[in-house]
Length: 217
Length: 386
Image (cartoon, rainbow over all chains, first blue to last red; front, side):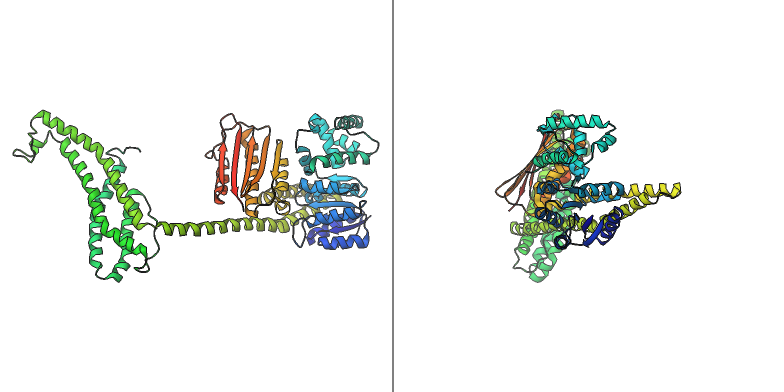
């Protein structure tokens, strides 16, 4: 797995390189600003881009904008955005941009090494990894629509689904059998008027599409 | 107005003010007249005279007459006003002291009517015979009325004395206008500076401590994941350090975000507020309708209003939902926060609403709180924005 990394803090950049190494990924280039990220992504054609949001020169949201550009250029490119804060607006823009693997996590999450590596692999494989904080932000928005029809348990399941967990993972987290999880998910799809389909990937996309519609203005 | 009682501290102070005023003004008036022969010397002395009078009002009436800047020359209207005051004040003091003195002494004489004949055997100064109990009774009654009247008179005269001093010793309308202008300017500067400072702190923490903590937590996480063959105490220590680093990270993040969210700079109020609204523990309906972005200062204030108010609602209101509306009407930004909680919010209850009102006042905004007991609560804020 070839990775381009963009992070302006030297300390964190070194750490992330170590972490990605540990995950068996090869960091082909590590840059410190968004311009460099765009150039490096073009040069190396990586499968995964990991980027910070706030980077020089303006220290605002250039990392995110670069990620959006990359996803427009190469929809199949997997992108993991790391940030000190998660904002649902940024998440919505990321999710709206393409259908490939996408992740948006708080930087804090790198502290939990195993889970972080898990999220990395999921994104690289075309799945999703949304920070639990973003997911709850997205789910909390406007309670007046279909989400109201969900039971609290179904809501929990949807939340974990949106984070990118598998049925088994969800079952483990909520202490449910996999069959029960499947039933909940079926109910969720029915209530949200989403046609159920086979396969983990399409299922996550359906949830994401739902989150996207709701969170975009 | 509350009527002061004859034996109250107020009555004593008002009376003392008027009486000492008589003495002080007489002396200062004479000096002013004398020194009028040497105008430059008089100009130099006037501020001292004025200080004496100001200290009198400060001591007895607890009123600080705003000082005026040093008198540069006789071309300065303040110089003439002050000289005029010191010439006029003996007259004012005499006018105000006379009725007060009369009332108090009349009260003493009247109330002691029954003992007067003993003190001053006839022939007496009184036109009526005080040995007649009816006459004495009338005197006592008049004395009582005067006693009750004296503090009111003292109050009135002290007020007269003070208002003359305020007009002539205090800054003129023109000077006040100029001062308001300077104050408005410097206040805007202070607010902008505070705002910039908040951003700088946010940025410094983001680039410094936060990154370092993330790195620390990550390394501890790596250690925890890879050093599995360590003795148990060492592993426990690493585990604990890891958890603590994560907790510190979270606390720092919450704090820094409250300072000034980066997304406010990048994407404006709508994006920043939607994050705040989403984090509230109850559903919040948010509507932000702005054609143009207000100034960063006003944006910061509006953000602060909404996040403070939502925090307040979460803490005190027991609300099940809230509504936030931000709209722009020409040069005003209107922020409306409505919740269905238990109401009864006041500025006094120390719920953070006071700080909110202050921050709004600092940018010349208007603030209205409607919160009957039992709810609902509405906060309406009106901020100026060009």
